[in-house]
Length: 486
Image 1: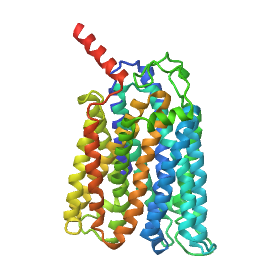
Image 2: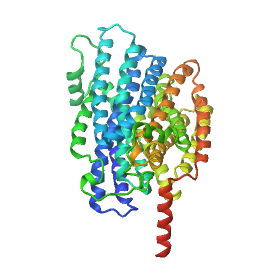
Image 3: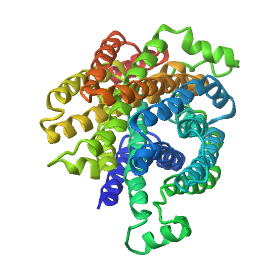
Image 4: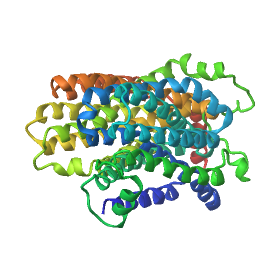
């Protein structure tokens, strides 16, 4: 049933994509662009499955991995992810998004195999090492390669989507994140359940047990949660290599001016230093990155810790949230991505600041609600949690997926979006390290920790309320003049 609902959501998203055509593209262009972004997006979704499977394994491993351990391991990976963009962003701007997504999938697949082997060795008692150090190292390797994923999607998107269409693409980007979270938590949990030593079930359960279960010791085959995403990613590598084109021109379409910050400057060659200056020498880009950091605190502050909280503190009457956590994050993430993206394009002339400010303000309210009802109303707590993730996905889509590309332009799309996405994961690392310790003392620190970040994000978004790239302003002015003449 859950899979059917996700399938329906994906079908609706695809329908909205084909319905939204403000630039009047030909039917073949719309179809070919879909053939481009769909495999890119599904690869990215399964990268998420190979990223948050760590969180699923934590509950399955029990005392072998404590909350503090998970916080440290996840923080090591997310900080690595954030810093990787200093290298990977300029590199993807040079080599293109197609090569970037293939590097991401191959590298993450290999790292997940190693994480699976490590889990098997530890559970079977065949290796005596510091578990936190070993997991932190391999998870950091995984996250290094994962960092190629988002920038590769956005690099390709920058050439295929006009600025006036990017709010909706940002919503699609948020959808891909959300579906990936569903794969990670719900499919991942299903894998864990089917590979338990005492589990019984149908043919799929029997197949997984036959492949992954130990024949020498009756233990839960938790390592399967790492091996299966690894295998799926290899399949998508082959599809990506076959179908993806970096630009419309490579697919035999004429040159397409997207009217972003690179318009009129596509002939200029940028060095890695020039690309990094696009971010670090721009006060506006630094503000966008700061909002990205706050969104990383909200999104993973809920995604990561509600799953742990609900397993540790029973939620009578609200068990549905834990049992279907991935599905709920998927559905509400899609809603948040489309709410932010469509509001930006339809109501705010492709400005990204206004919807971001509203989403941050709503997060602040929901964090307050969490603080009040943390232990008294499991149902209200669950609702507030998914609402925060809904808004956080919308913010991430608007900032890393859209605003960074608008102001960075096609030439610097990977670098600019990468730094913003890196700051998002830097925020995730901050919350992971902090909440891993704070929640061990008292779970009330959880919502309190989110509140100041929501306030700061809202204030910065208000500051950039009116900002648009110069080429976009010119395009909008000329389009408005044309409509008046007609």
